Image (cartoon, rainbow, N blue to C red; front, side, top):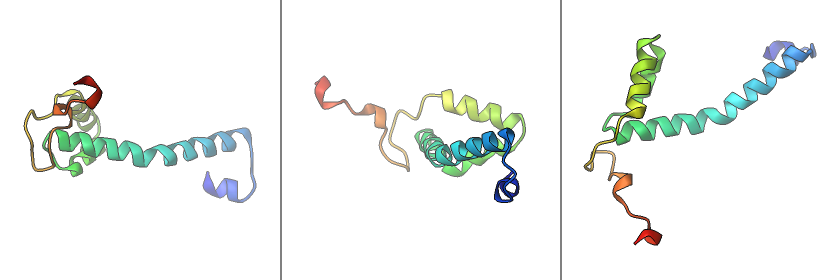
Length: 90
């Protein structure tokens, strides 16, 4: 796709593929950081996000972890963010 755009072969499909590529590049870093933060809430290393590279089982395990409550106590990655009350709620 990138070579096709560089050579000037602009068709409707190439333009849409280019827009989709830009979309993925814009949202990749924020999605990665949210996933790593969620792993830290569970007490796991951020590298566990790479489990999604395992077909089927990895994705299912990742979804289960994302839906699980975090650890109720402080862990090696810091305090629990949900244990803090907002100032306007006091």
